[in-house]
Image (cartoon, rainbow, N blue to C red; front, top):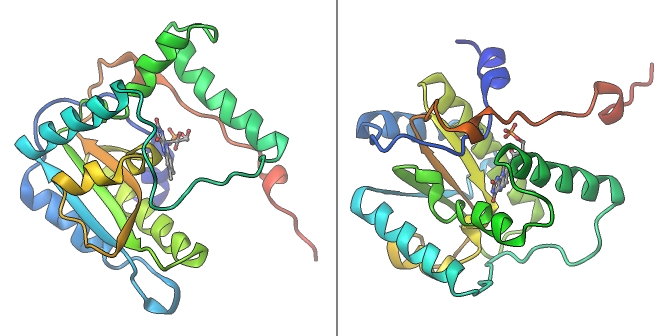
Length: 221
Ligand SMILES: Cc1cc2nc3c(=O)[nH]c(=O)nc-3n(C[C@H](O)[C@H](O)[C@H](O)COP(=O)(O)O)c2cc1C
């Protein structure tokens, strides 16, 4: 498999088989991901992997928080300014595409909450990883975290693994810290659930569209 094949076959997996990924495969992915580039080679990242009983405990605690109606408090707060309309439109379309695949109407708040809860169920994955960086860092280091994320994701595709990045896993950082081994001064940016893809999970049929090249580029000669 080459990079183009990994990139074009990757999608966010929201249904997993319970079988764990062998330790040596997990180690290899994160060992290779160390080679990702970062500004001034600062390598600001830390990845805290949670598996086995710890992963089940994490799932249970996150779901309890979600079920209690607690909105959590993120280490890196979400933007509070209103987003440009076109971004809002794409966000909504993203959510609705998952709801409609699962047969849930836009007006069905309970149904939508059931889908949102799946984030905290880790979509049934046997592993989760928290991506964190020192809290003092800002936007430029967030870029490094994104590069690491894509590197990890493609390495997983190459090994027949599915994954999903989850901003939702940054929602309850205190709960994450209770279970995962996260450096004290770090803030959690996002999490990634991963494992073997459940090909029978209907949610995994969703493929999100992309804007055409001319919408995201400009060329001057
Ligand atoms: C940083 C980041 C955070 C994300 N957070 C979530 C999340 O909390 N829950 C979720 O279901 N998907 C999440 N996603 C997945 C995106 O919705 C998904 O990447 C996007 O819709 C494109 O679809 P694709 O990954 O299947 O190509 C996240 C993706 C990224 C890159």
